[in-house]
Length: 118
Image: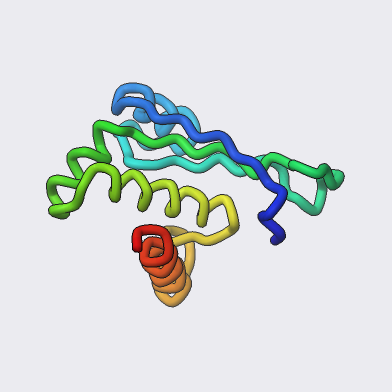
């Protein structure tokens, strides 16, 4: 997928709002760190110069907790969650796939973190 001319929306929110989204869209009634909502399948959509890729929603409260647990900075954790959400929008998965595919996503996430957080 060519991502040079794609756009996405990014929402930083709290645990209450992300829990509601997680319940409504994934039937999981608990807060989570990041949710990704891909827009229509690109093959079914006409090509636009800046076609939307999707939405990423991040709970800042959860990101801060995870940063402390992982001895990470909140900024670094937020970048990791943006990367994680973006990979989901690009078709990567770690939940409904083989262990090999989940590892592929984790490797890509780490590589992008190294690239961005030099």
